[in-house]
Length: 314
Image (tube, rainbow, N blue to C red; front, side, top):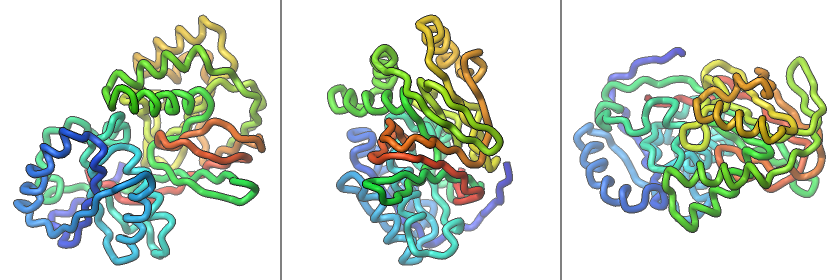
């Protein structure tokens, strides 16, 4: 992992806040954050999201106006929207943008990789003594009514059961709120209802045709609020993928035990591969999520890595 030290406070920051992430806790903590940013002598302007997809519009607008340093206060979904705003903007050097994150979501899996989740480090320290690390980005190409679409993702992409868990989690959060146990309950609900789908998978140097139960495509290594499906590193220029074919009941139970121990990829039923490009040839619609956001479209689906796409401030 390479990083460059920057000991000067950048004088032009944009703060993007998702007020629905963290809710009461965020409202309580924002005054402390505001004061900390002022103490750090950071010149900043604040934007607040109001609806799904709004952070895409805000981030695109900000970078096209010249902002290159974005502080995000929200969860994995907020991060995903911001990188999609950056990469659908008209600026030439998108890799010049830096993002810092104060996690306030449910899963906070991207923040967890960087040790930012529940970090006691002062906000002011993040700006005075910050490391800017070049991180990779994933790009998923898919189709809507025959027209090509793209969705960028930082943490990972899930297919099949993995995406079904995200879908159930979204429904459960609307009922019970963003508690840490919601994902685990959703996983247990989904595991007994999801059925495998026949897929044609193409990697850099291999292809597989199989009845697929689930696929994890990792740029980061965490999902579902701290569970590890792949040993991924978002600075190594490759995806780490993990596929489980049609499982027996015994495989499901033992795979869950491996998952909760943080080593799912070591389960004998898993097929682990590294690749820069991953394609699902199926043309029909499949259940797919990127950074926990559901993809509404159809195949074929192609995920490609963009090396050193952004700067992450850690």
